[in-house]
Picture 1 (spheres, rainbow, N blue to C red):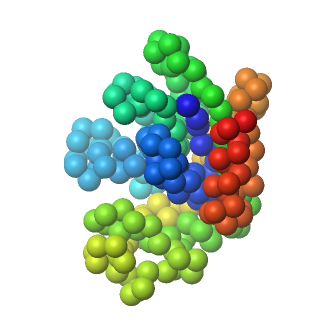
Picture 2 (cartoon, rainbow, N blue to C red):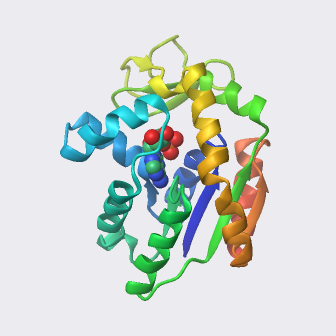
Length: 214
Ligand code: AMP
C-alpha cells in the first residue's frame, strides 16, 4: 500500500500517518520530519534546508526528491508506506512517478485532508512540540498536564518557528500556489480521495481507514 497524505499544513496528516504506523506498520515518510532531523544534526541537507523551513517556503525540488529517493529504498518500505507532506509541487509528483515506476511499484491512493483555513491557523498556532521526544500537544485542544513540560519525557515544550502566525500565513499561501495544483493532478489520475479532516482525530482515522480499503 503506497498512499500520499495531501493537504495544507495543520490538517492532521502527520497525526493520522502516525496512527497507521502503529496500526498497520506502514512507515510514515514525512519530508518535514526528515528536514527537521537533518537541521538538528547539522547535515549538509539540513544546512541547506534551514532557511526555507524557518520562512515557511519550500525546499528546492532536487533536494527534496533526493531525500525521498534514498528513503523509499530502505527495507521497511517493502510492504508500503505513507508519504506525508510529499509531493508538494507538480515537479515532485512527476519525479515520484518515475521513482515508483523504476521500483516497479505504483501509487494506490492520494488522501486529501480538508480543513477550513481559520481552523488550521488555530491548530498550528496553539501547537507545542517536545524538543526531546517529538510528542505533540496543543495549548487548548490537548494541553500537557504541566504548562510547557512534556507529559511523556518531562522535557521542555516549544513552539516551532514555522507555527508562528506570520509564518503560518506564508505556509498557507505556498500551499495554495504550489501544492494545491496536485489536487487536479491526482484527480485526473483517478487516485484522489477526499476526507473531512475538520472532525475529531478518531473520526478522521475511521474515514481514512475506509478510504484506504476502498
Ligand atoms: P511540514 O512539517 O510537512 O509542514 O514541513 C515543514 C517544512 O519543511 C515546509 O514548510 C517546507 O519548508 C519543508 N518541506 C517539507 N516537505 C517538503 C516538500 N515536499 N517540498 C519542499 N519543502 C518541504
